[in-house]
Picture 1 (cartoon, rainbow, N blue to C red):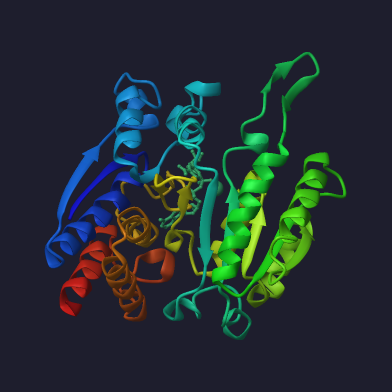
Picture 2 (picture 1 turned 90 degrees about the horizontal axis):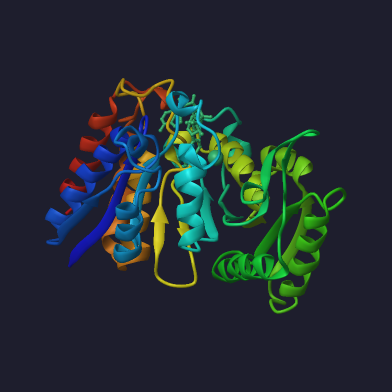
Length: 352
Ligand code: NAI
Ligand code: MG
């Protein structure tokens, strides 16, 4: 098969973890006799530095055409003086998600065995944790009107019933393939958008009588996630809460550097990226953990190309590397970003 995708390395550690993931993809395509057609494009600060908009037209056109996108991360202190849509995050990542209608962001939380003793939580509390966060990605406060006026500053949060309904359906559909439980997280004691969220989720849940529905307020959820992580199956939440809760969930898994994500729509288009940012504090030093990016590439093979065996081969290789402590410093190892990429690729080759 010809695996044609758009590669957006972006900023900070993005290109470093991206190179490691491409190395693994090259090995996989060699082992499984595929060809790779990589369309590398500029995004974020890297695009700005090249004199382009944060989301250049050529980049968007490539994403739309290939329908399979592997992205590193965007942003960093270098571009902090910019405002509004001139900023890497606001000017590239958000419009890319919005314009491609990638409203369903899926982020797993299933600690690898090899990392159970690396997380700050005790092993016996973590063992058996296996949930997925279904985060709404194209609505809410990140996309509302924002600005400054005489009164100070404002960010508007809006959700339509249709927006809540479609992400709730994704969550319940996923729960039907898993352990049939949805935990919907909101702030309905204070926010009107959350009241609409809860009502709409209730309505959708009536179509799924086999699925147990639980509602939690987001502040309480931050605690429940640490005290009873094994109780969750599919966690359904709005854009900003999902952003925050998944950074917390990554701690259960040992590091920010091991969680991939998929952003999907109703069609076939998919954007795959680690949940972490550009990590300017460690950029350029070979310290970044590439596993989240490598797993994002595996998800792309599975979800955009239907290459299940290839995706599983990468995931098994990652599990093996973690078991053998072939890891970067965030997980207590001594390998560089590139060395982890090579270690995972070698395991893919050895298993073939
Ligand atoms: P961050 O996720 O980049 O880093 C948070 C902490 O985790 C840092 O200490 C970092 O060193 C560590 N970390 C992150 N990824 C790691 C990896 N793969 N291996 C080892 N350690 C890792 O979040 P931060 O520092 O708040 O934001 C930095 C920049 O990234 C900002 O400009 C922010 O806007 C941007 N950002 C971009 C995102 C994206 O492109 N999707 C998502 C989140 C933040
Ligand atoms: Mg985030």
